[in-house]
Amino acid sequence: MRTLLMWLLVPLALATIVGAALLYPFGHEQKTGAAIGLHQKPVSAVVTGVQENCGEKCIAVTVRMTDGDANGQSITIPSPHGPGAPHFQLGDEVVLSYSGSQPQAAESYQIVDFQRGWSLVILAVLFAAAVLLLGRWQGLAALGALLLSFAVLVLFVMPSILAGENPLLVAVVGAGLIMFVVLYLTHGISARTSTAVLGTLVSLALIGVLGALFSAVSSLTGLDEDTINLVTVLGTDIDTRGLLLAGTLIGALGVLDDVTVTQTSAVWELRRANDKLTWRELFAAGSRIGRDHMSSVVNTLVMAYAGAALPLLLAISLAGRSLGEILTAQQIAQEIVRTLVGSIGLVAAIPVTTALAALVAVRQEVAPVAAPEPEPEPEPEPRTKTVKRAKPQPKPRPARIEGDLFIGYDPDKGPWERPSEPGARRAAPARPAPPARRRSSGSP
Image: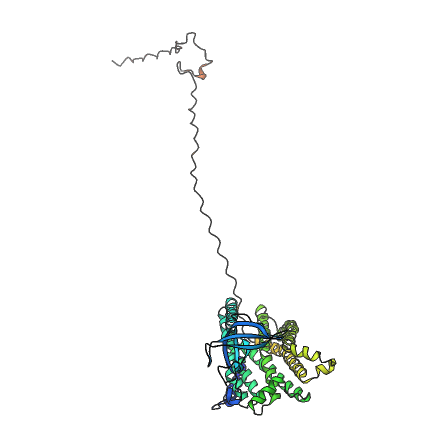
């Protein structure tokens, strides 16, 4: 099974690398700034005064420039005042737009934005700290994968599209690079990760086919306000429909990774918990888990697109048009196509990934679940030694002496009689004299 996965994924990985090499604009120098007609330059400044004597809906903002051709000089710039207009306070760090004509003239500058670098840096540090605190080494790998994903977008996807390459092909190759790098770097090289990669590739292919089909059937051009401005500035022909599909693929990639990795891990853990499960039983159990995951993921994708297009939805709703006209408008219809195509890909990723994971898992050796180590018993507290005092032993009683100590009374001789005088001793009975020895006549 590992060999089969290798034969399936290695050619796809090589094709992704070759595609990146062919689509990358080697030797192409993209014109920027004044070279393409953008004469506005950003200049940093600090607000030093605010006066409300400019007019009815106008305030005069005095700023001191901290860089640019007129570094250190102060100018007063009129700014709109009222609902929806920015509010300025002393010490605010702002960004000016300089037209490049007269550095000393206030008419050459316009306040366009606030400086927010430090706040974003603090937020990024908090995010990294939270990921590292929970994920530890795997969290560090996830942060590295995130940085590599941004690198692919900035160093490959954007330059290739600006150089005139097909946006859909660029998005497919870029999504492949991000997928291989992120999944293998975050979850390691294993059969489980390879199964998730294969499921993600199948779902991405389905999203690309459905997106191309329904964008053509729905006559979507991909020309919204931002795209029109981009085409006007570049002055080159860009496949705007392909740009729409590229955004759909890249937007769905992050959610696809979540679905495929979760389903693969669920199947592996089911197999580990019960190695007697067959392929059908693993697939059925994993599908039940996937159904709960599917409802939340689809709702997440819909809410993400709706939140991004919320100002547009509010603006169109004020036009007094019917619901059908609003939903079929160009800017709304392309968001609907993105949402539904991406959701179909997510729904399809669940059974596809679950089936692949079940096929691979039943052929893998199950690692025994490590038994939790018993907690060491707490050492008994040392007991204070108490010295026991020996109990006083009773003195042994002397043996009973029978008879009279003075007269030597013996019970066998009859009853005892106390002598009349206390000091007198009872006379012992006279013993008969021993008989005399008879002499024989023949003895001397």
